[in-house]
Amino acid sequence: MPGYTCSWKELSKMISHDEVTLDNIEYYLDCVKSEFKGYDEEKDELKLENNDTNRPDLWSLEGTARQILSVHFGRSFDYDFFEKSPEESHRIIVDGKLSSVRPFIGGFAVSGIEVSDSLLAQLIQAQEKLCDNFGRKRELIAIGVYDSSQIQFPIHYNAADPDNTRFMPLGFEEQMSLREIIEKHPKGIQYGKIVAGFERMPVLMDDKGAVLSFPPVINSNDLGKVKIGDKCLFVEVTGTDKEAVILAVNIMAANIADHGGIISPFTVEYADSKEVAPRRFNDKISVSSEFAEKLSGCSVSPEELERLLIRMGHKTERKGNEVVCIPAPYRRDVLHMSDLVEDYCIGLGYNNIEPQMLDSVTVASESAVSLEEKTIRELLVGMNFQEVMTYILNSKENQLTKMRLDEEIVEIGNPMTETYGVVRKSILPILLEIESKNPRAEYPHRIFETGETAEINRALAEYSETKHKVAALISHGNANFSELSSILQAVMYYLGRDYVLVPAEHPSFIAGRCGYIMHDGKNIGVIGEVHPEVLENWSITMPCAGFEITL
Image (cartoon, rainbow, N blue to C red):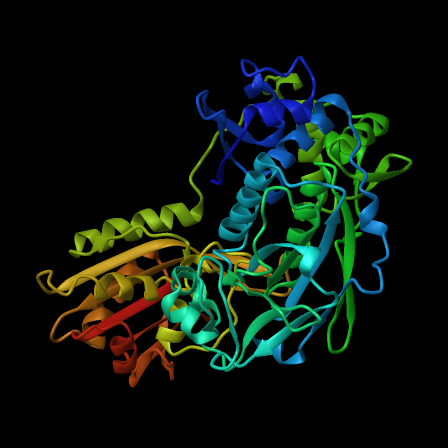
């Protein structure tokens, strides 16, 4: 979970309520979904850990103070700059050639503020937390902050020649090309891989052609350095997802505004459209008091529901028993009415919800799927198979590319890492991955796993369907279809399922040595000898055969 530090003196100054003390800060942190991890008095450093990765706006001193003030003291945070029209010069002109590189950008100017030591520290920490956690180490989004007193607007976001575009990067005293920065600069070595594979790379320049930065890698040493005492700032966010970019812009703008900064939005001019940021998302989600009552177990009036949702930062409009909400512009975690009920409970305080005794008693029993899994475990273990237990999340490369497949798969919208970027559609690739990591173990290898998978199903409201499957793999010098078929026959017999094998052409298996497993006229699985190319993709040198069936 995201951990962050902030100055207790600065936090208490922003909250400015005597009842909030270091001794009782844990009580107030409940509404921020943060845990108090200690206080270093010598450094004046409050250590916090956030328990919600869906609220990047809370990973900072400003977000923490804003939530406490709003929930506990009813303070309203209504930022006027989200409806402001940009000045004529406040434009960012985007080169169309960046559409396949790093296409999206947003930004704003800041005035009416003087950068202090504490403000600079908070700016840097908010920037780093957003880039590293929410921004997936700058791959999804990256943030740049500049002293705007020397910048000539409008800004140009260009696709530059990496060998002929030169500037002095932050921390260096000589000019370097973009290619040299990637190869030699510490930040280039760390983040250059994000854009290294493209013929042209992104560069931010002002209207005079002076370089601001090479996003997402490094700022320039001339215009990209913010110092204590600076009074005018320019903040930009670049990335590969437009909504993520706008959300990061909104969070940074709200944070700086909370310190008294005057925010001026920018127009972003794409090749075929225009976008203003920061701006509201204006999504509307409704929740009724009856639904809130059913989900929370509390007695909920429409008036109380609306009051507490306002305290959670939402703009509201009441229509009878329903409350229509426009979430705060620095939030994108409200996707369903259930999220609004959660906000209601946070605003009410979980400690204020009275426990209720159960009013009914039921007798539990194992599901049919659990009973099948238990039978299969006993059978396969009795046949000298070893059970493995792995994660339901996997990588797209493992599930599809290495298996020679090109199919739809349930993907995670904003994964922290590509290693866990999809929900597994098949268990067999995971068994092959395990096999690839154990070439020195004594043969034969016989492994299996039972568990949940997910498949696309557009007939359902959620567009996906959970399926329980079992997969088994054998690997040794003579592993073949016949050996595995006898194991499948025993499994199906003890499960009480009749089946037939139908010859099949499957990309993951050898042609002529593969079949679909049919039960009651339905395809419930596949069995076969693994294709040599698949084995090569996994760096497996021994023949393998496997089957996978849906329970």
